[in-house]
Image (spheres, rainbow, N blue to C red):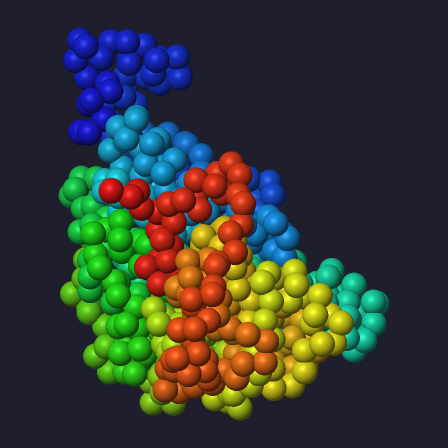
Length: 555
């Protein structure tokens, strides 16, 4: 056992003395030591139940003759961090989570790990750590929140509430109605109830083969989630016994499966940041150019919020992620021989997992769209790419040409939107919000929600070198690379320049001649954001969004 490095032999007498101080018995030390990475805290609604999940995991490990040892991981609530300086500290935690988990696991020589994440950066951060550490590992997440229910009986959620703020600011909703939304939007613990980033990544954890069936969809408040946690605790012991490691599971084909199911589910555009970053840690090159190729052959089968009016609990009742994968297997777009944490293949896992509700999971013969939920665009405005959740774009905005309304921060854009200065046909450009420029690549949920709340989501596009919440809908195009802060063309856009967006043909063009762009470039000095503390370190090391915004040390 790897843990013999800290518990076996005469030389380890001091180490055993410290285990004695923990109250551990000889019997416990004779078993594999399993690190149970608990992301519980009292500030993130998606994490307030993780103490219960952790206790269930530990029982499962004990039942299977292992010794569980609980260790912590941090997490940020993106909703609480939204539209202020706190959002600069969201994406950056992904690397902190990965690094700190590596430190804990390697310093204490665990034989295996059970990761217990739930929210946006916590899930990919722990997946990155699993790939980097590469000891037997399994995931069990905290589960999604139930959808809210308004007084009129209709379901609601957090994204609707953000848009309701826009309606209120536009004079289209009363304060009384807004207060009703506020009280009903988030009724339980769990990751927010639509196909936002947290739920996207929890579902893709299943697809990658790192979580058991139901990991992405069983609601946080269901007792079934506790049973799942116990099974995950038991299953880690099988992985340790058979020495099945994350890199045995997270292969190139597994990542291609993740991209494929991403397209079918209509996941958050943040998956286009996180999947390449996880792949990087697994030693797999994942070029986003392949995303459009996968999209061409992958139908979009689900329209969960914000794209539609269904929620994670509905997907769970319809058969969950495995039912979606079973649908896709009918047209042969999955690699079904991939090994998973069940110790079985994808093919064995999804066999018999039928679609139980064709209104929630459309059959492959009758998809919402014949192509996938995400598109990668390129052009002179984004030579290295940008991304859009095309499944959440109104048909009339799939192709749009309009004048640029240019802002050098989210705050500037919000002020203009609320002042009524953005009109139908405009293309809002928000720059200097990228990984380096922010720094931290803030989510632009508030600007997009204000636009939607004012009824302009079918008339106005938004382009940014920042990113979007999974709760964003509309022609919201993010991750523009290279970003303004490193001299990207988005920094050369002038007020009133025409921008041509063609999502159907994966194109985004600034309608300015090459000669004019070259002239502008000669006179262009990117603005620099002065950062302090951890953000300064992050700014110095972070790479471009199109490569997953991973951290690299310069040679």
